[in-house]
Image (cartoon, rainbow, N blue to C red; front, side):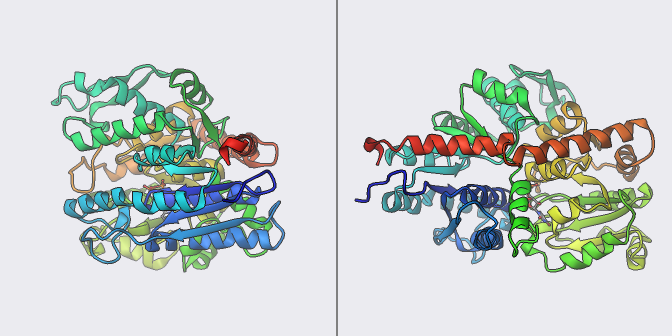
Length: 503
Ligand code: UDP
């Protein structure tokens, strides 16, 4: 058996959940570790490997051209998705179109334990960064004596809210027929109050509730947790995590920003972040080049959110009424709509698009990092997925928040009430694709856009706060910044564990 000593690089296995919102930040995080000399493996299935392949190649190229401090070594260990009767090509969150497929998918997820175990036996990495959604990986890693670092890809704030929810179940005390009644989340650094309808209802979703409890318990008995966040963003929640929840946390983000910086240092990267998937990136950027600074609102809802035809119609009306230029991603990474555009496009909107002056629609995958960092973009209508939120924070762009489910309502709270870098459209219903929700009128959408992009002192102040936060984010990932140092501390600690009994 090979004895690992200080002369051998650390080896970390990354094991992301099978959805772009988990894979992309994991690949970006691996790039950061690799740039500091860590050997990184990412265990995933073929179609999910394709989502991160270009980001991984870019990280490796950046190092080869001398951009990184030491030669990186990220490899993707590809294993087949277990045969659970899903159609070919269905092996990630956005590809699931029915409850039955969803059930099979989660059965397949359980069966990934076998290749995970095999990897740990064969390679004996120094640590594993496992998605929290693989709750079983806590026991598997413990059996192999490998420290497990949990990663969910959410904010510390949302994790703290989720943990309060799991511990106290405050929803239960509020009657079901009072959807707008306030629910207070106990034990948090701030008074955080949600509407009942904005929260997951444990009674309606017992299997989700049990899943959240398992995740929470697995993360609790793990070595610690890595966050795509930075210390200046949510300091009270870092303290809460450490002192109240008694967990260890390392904040190494914003990872998309840090890995973009790395890629710009390499000749091959040209700062493209995770955007190798966008064939028409250049066309979109040329369109933005011809627009005045801060004049464009970017609209995208990640890879999983679904908008019904009435919602899409109101959104289109809202964009039109806002008077702002816009780039609207319809169906980004599989999200959006299967309905034909004629079903929801308001009269005159197609003409507006055809003229090509006011706005463009991107069908498919948008180069989000490049768009958000373009000078023409002055606002972002977002579902508050944590990656998108943090990408906007990093770019210094204020947000119009439109959460749908999962951690998104919590992230909205953070953005609108704590950080004050966004304005909500008044989304009220925690609902999945298959469930109905209240439709928000175009007038409301236009008004919210005006509140972050318009004239007036409040809008100015929101933009200024967003700009300042963007600067803090950039400082965090620079050499000597808090995220850069947290990553170094974690590496040192993992290396120090290599005492003779650990090798
Ligand atoms: N993304 C992108 N182009 C698209 C759609 C999504 O680059 O057309 C990226 C986006 O930049 C972010 C991720 O996909 O990094 C989506 O993650 P998020 O947490 O925002 O939302 P989710 O899809 O998980 O709901």
